[in-house]
Image (cartoon, rainbow, N blue to C red; front, side, top):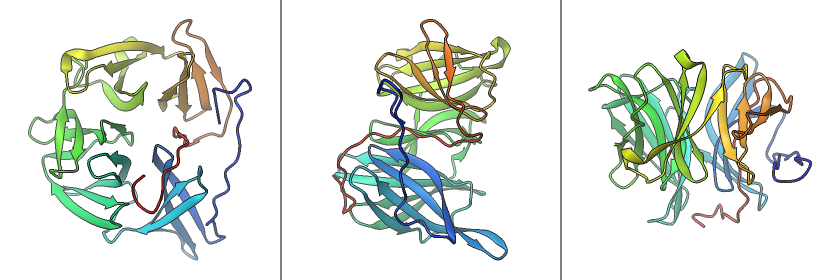
Length: 278
């Protein structure tokens, strides 16, 4: 759905590999690459396989990739562009007694896995790709609190990013990219509102700036900002209502009444080659 067009034009995309005995889960995106997880239907229900698809609708091309490691159903994922290697990387984060990070290189068509026991995945499924790295809200085993971290692809370990000063331990925080900035949106239960902050200078704690507030009059338990329109409006993903547009200037909200439980991700058309890199 293109919200920059006058009538918010939408079009259906037909997956070229779809079969009657399989279906897919929309995971995440980076530039024009969309990551999908493939599931097989069987006589006993549904099996979670280790097959994934990197799909570029812009050039009508896709690539199947199969993870050599065991991945649970709830493994979190992210795709980012590594400019130092001119390579797109896929990351999967899962947890047991220790947190495992599985990475895939599109350029080299290779897999790797590392263990980092300092953090474990927070219940949030949201991630944000900024500065060539995937960021998550995770829990620090040492500090016993939630923190913002990213995975350094060169050193192959998690590194921290300072959170907003006004964020309290009990506030529910998630990440998103808005206007090219790393943003944190915090559900302030006591105020019945969601506050959205942007890190205007990456890595500097003092640069966190509040962008806008979403009042809890929008009755939806799973609300996620997706992106900003050219007019400064906020496109929202909503569990109950599907998609909606919120205007921070006047507080107006327009739901589009899409499917209940819809999964929505931002997508930018570009000519990314699936042969590796750009």
